[in-house]
Image (cartoon, rainbow, N blue to C red):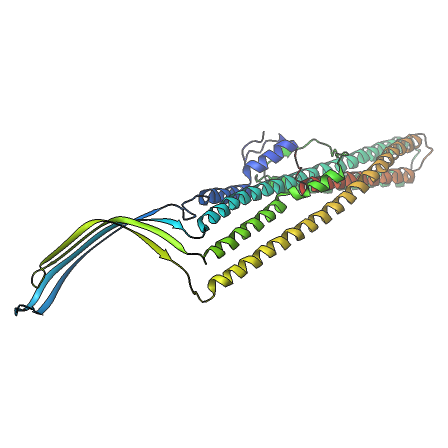
Length: 422
C-alpha cells in the first residue's frame, strides 16, 4: 500500500498496486463516471416525454374603466372610474396518447446512450491500465540497465584494484593506473546519468497514478513477457474493443434519431383534463358578477401538414449521420486491425530476437569473467577488458530494449482485443 501523498517514505510498489492506485485516483475515470451518471439519470420515461404533465395557472386583474352602455330596454349607463375584477384559476393535466411512437423510440435511444457511456468508461479504464503498465515497465527497463552498468562498474573497480596492486610492486605503469581511474569515474557518471532516467521514469509513473511527483517508490520487478498469445483468437476479439463497441452503439443511436425525425411527420394526440375556475365582477354595467367553475376533459389532435420542409431535411440529415457512423466504425475496425497486426509483428520478432539476445548476454557475461581472469594473470590487456565490458553493456542494453519492446507489444495487443488485465 502507498502512503498518502506528501509522505516521503520509500514504498515498495508492485504492478497491481500501481494499476489499482491509478484506477482509484484517476480524474479521467471520475469524469467518465459523471458522464455515466448523467446518462443514467436521463434514461427515464419522463425525459422521453411519456409521463403526463400537470400545470396550474392563476391570474387576478383589477381594472378601472370608463363605462358607456346603451341597453335594449332603453337604459343608458355612463360612469367613469368603474372598478372591475377578473380572476381565473386552472389545473390542467395532459397525457400523450400517440405521436408516432416517438416517445418509445426516444426512450430506447436514452437506454443506448447509457450503455455507450458505460462502454466509454470501460475504454477509459483500459487506457489507464495500459498507460500505467507501460510506464511501470519503463522504470523496470531503466533499472535493469542500471544493474548492467553497476556490474560493469564493479569490473572497472576490480581492474583498478589489480593495477594498483601491480603498481605498488612496480609491475604496472602510471598510464594504466590513470586510464583505469578514468574508466571508473566515467562508469560512475554513466550510472548517475542512468539514475536520472530512472527517476524521471518514476515521475512519469507517479503522474499516471495521479500521485504527487515527490512521492518515493521502490520497484523490484522483471519484464516477463507472455509468450502464449494466440493471434487468431486475439484478432477475432478486436470487435469487442470498447471503442469499436461504442462506435456500433453510435450507429444504433443515430438510427433511433432517424425514427424520431420520421415520427414528427405523424399526428399527435393528447388527452387534456382538469379543473377551471373563473370570476368576473364589475361595479356597473350589464353584468355585475359572472362566476363559473368545474372539471373539463378534451382531446387535442394535431397533424403536421407543411413545416417548410424542416422535418424532411431533419430525416435526411439523420440518415446521413447514421451512414457516417457506419463508416466511422468500419474505419476504426480497419485501423485497429492494422495496429494489431503491427503489434503482433513487433511482438513475434521481439520474442525471436530475445532468445538470441539472451544467449548473447550470457556469452558476454562469461567473456567478461574470462577476460578478467586472464587480466589478473597478466594474459589480457586493459583494452581487452574494456572491449569485453563494452560488449557486456551493449548486449545488456539490447536485451532490456527487446524485453520492453515485446512487453509493450503484448500490452498493446491485449488492449486492442479488450483482454488487458494484471
